[in-house]
Amino acid sequence: MVLAFAGVCATSMAQDATLKYSVATNSFWSNWFVQANLVGTAFWGNQEVQNNFSKSPLKGFRNNLGFSVAVGKWFTPGLGLRTKFNGFWGRTVISEDKKINASKYWTLNEQVLFNLSNMIVGYNPDRLWDFIPYASVGLNRNMTHNRYSAVMGLGILNEFKINRKVAINLDINYMFGQAKMDGFTHMLPGSKTYNARSLKGIFANHDRTLNVEVGVTYNLGTPGWNAVPDVDAIKAMYSAQIDALNASLADANAENARLKDQIKNHKCPEVGGQTVTVKEIVSAPVSVFFNIGKSKIASQKDLQNLRAVADAAKANNAKIAVTGYADSKTGSANLNQSLSQKRAEAVADALVNMGVDRANIETSAAGGVDTLSPISFNRRATVELK
Image 1 (cartoon, helix red, strand yellow):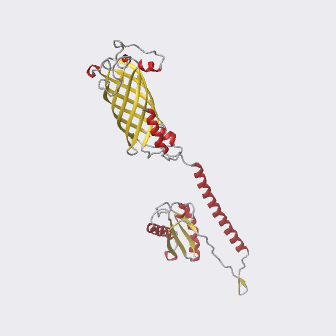
Image 2: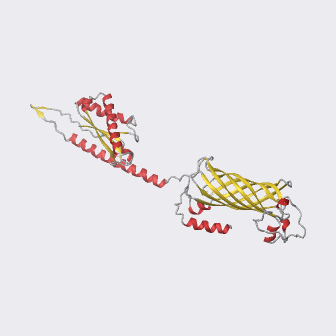
Image 3: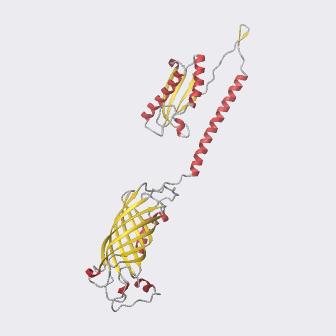
């Protein structure tokens, strides 16, 4: 049965083209889950050795219904722990009469889960089927006969996701316990033990159960895992921004050098034999930046540069042109047009507060643009003397 499930799982995973990536460690309260299942269990006891009882798990004297509940946590996409309680109605197989065989028991197991779907193919939060083998150790108590015994086992948990919070379970597991697990510590008449050194003898001389469980898993807290940030991509992004700033600085330095040379070589005109000094205003556009979707000036530092333009305009009775922009990557064209106009008006209001005559301020809106990189630089208004 295990091999059959493994074969089906391999076929399914071969068609799953999930990209593998590293995941970040989540908080302690993330990726917890609870489960509740209806259980069908078949029982075999060591006292049956070499008798004529049917070995079929479908026989009524050998099987019974029960339930199980579990709580667990995934520590990585591939590794988790689960504590499971199951019982309640069992069989102590000493005859082919199910009434005589009836008993009550419970089993408490601690289980290590291995999500092979995530481990082999890669983590995918939207995968419909997860194939999860597990190993368990625990304690069994037969309440009818007041016996305790250690148990261990192997199983396969299949989870079929309905959404990221809820999944349907199909859990098949085989439990292997001490000879007193079913509460019967003797041998039936005519029975004798196998050679305990043989594989067949190891199984036959112990009590065993086969459990088929169907139920529901509910994920508590925040389910799933976040990808680890791509450090190389982040470095490349910041490198591109630095290159853009360096290029802008180089342009500013070149313009500064040009203006210095113009001032150095400027000759003042003469009127009536006297030298007349002419004041010439040279102004580069000043940018005022905004947060995404906002028309409120983001930083008070931008107002310092704006004040220099305001002082020059007042001293020379000059006109000021204010142009608003938005980034075209967010919002519709109509929304960006309105937002860019509001940004221009916000800067105009700031200039008026600095003493500039509103009649000397011209505002315009350029709408959404993508002329600058990174895109956030386009969320601005430019101010220049005319």
